[in-house]
Image (cartoon, rainbow, N blue to C red):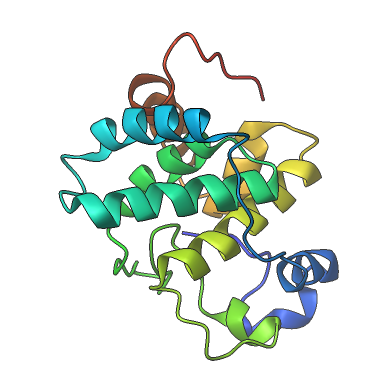
Length: 183
């Protein structure tokens, strides 16, 4: 579930800076410094994701998009993968009880707020663009405190359990010990 600090009924309370950040999301560019780095990361992450996303072509495409959107937003791609695992378990058609949608469980009212009512939140690229932009906004707002940022992203519901699940996923599945994770 995604905290927006507002719902469609009280959207006037949404932070205008977050709306602006979503509106200004840049077009995708190459997010890897070189092809060797891309091959290494994609191979490693693809192996980890294979059981959840068996289609090889879609899996690599998804990982490329996760890396590009996370990097564009200034986030660790592995953190985004951990968040997706907890939010939707990589089901791009997931819909929560609160109507959050897609991989990162983005609330549909964001589309109207930024003037893109026809955006498809089940499209991985669109969902990741919104979700990464929102998570980065909350991380900046929390001055780098990942716990606070995840609390805002989740809507502060059952935050201890949620934070534990995201960090466990990050540390045990997506982030090899040699990478090291800093807030």
